[in-house]
Amino acid sequence: MTATKIYGHRGCMGTYPENTLLGFRKAIEQGVDGLELDVQLTKDGEVVVIHDEILDRTTDGNGYIKDSKLQEVKQFSAGANYAHFPNYDEATWVAERVPTLQEVLELLSPYDTELNIELKTSLINYEGIEEKVLSLVEQFGNGRKIIYSSFHLPTLLRIKNIDQDAEIAWLLDQRISHPLDYIQSLDLEALHLSKHVVLSDVYYLKDFFDKIRVWTVNDKDEIKQLLDLNVDAIITDFPGRALFYRSERKS
Ligand code: G3P
Ligand code: MG
Image 1: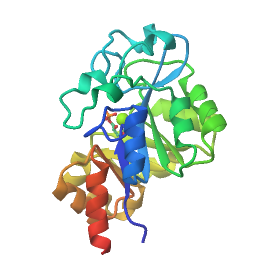
Image 2: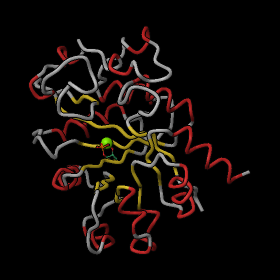
Image 3: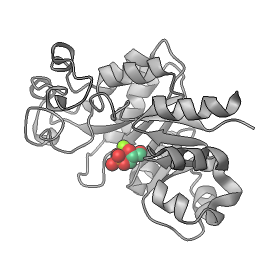
């Protein structure tokens, strides 16, 4: 039986600035099996790795990504807002920029790390984002396992329509009826469920935990519970912590 994989959420956002090359490097150093990141589209059509539709929370800039060209987005620091983190290192962190998806794929190139690309299309309809993401993966993905996820199901169906081999996972933070029917009917590779959905009713999913990834799981007891259930993956802000709990049970 394959052990539950550990995915770093937005890199390792519990300890390093989220969705930055620094955070992705640190997560890889910790030994993650996979990384989760979020993508949006700039005004000039570049796929950038940032969680929010606006720059305000995670950078020292402001405004919508959709209204900013890549060059403008790159003017802002993606690390300066995290001075309250215990291991904040001003010189390094302030220099961090919002990465493009291409930059992240290039960073991952030497590693076999799995990558979950979450397309943030629920609030803004980024026309053509599916084609752009698939094209970047084709050029720079280096053959790694890629899982495309989104809360917005039509985005995933568009991806599948462009590339029938693409692995798509529907993100949900609420219970749906007959989840296995969705998986089979829509050819979903997995469901990415919030921990509340999974932990509130384990029985409901018991026959297909290998098709379930769970976010965002940081609590020790919850991590251990999900390792026991042998879900496919845990997506966590503290991958080092989850990797430690997993290693404990092997020894
Ligand atoms: O992909 C899991 C998780 O990232 C979904 O929620 O808001 O953190 O992107 P969010
Ligand atoms: Mg996400």
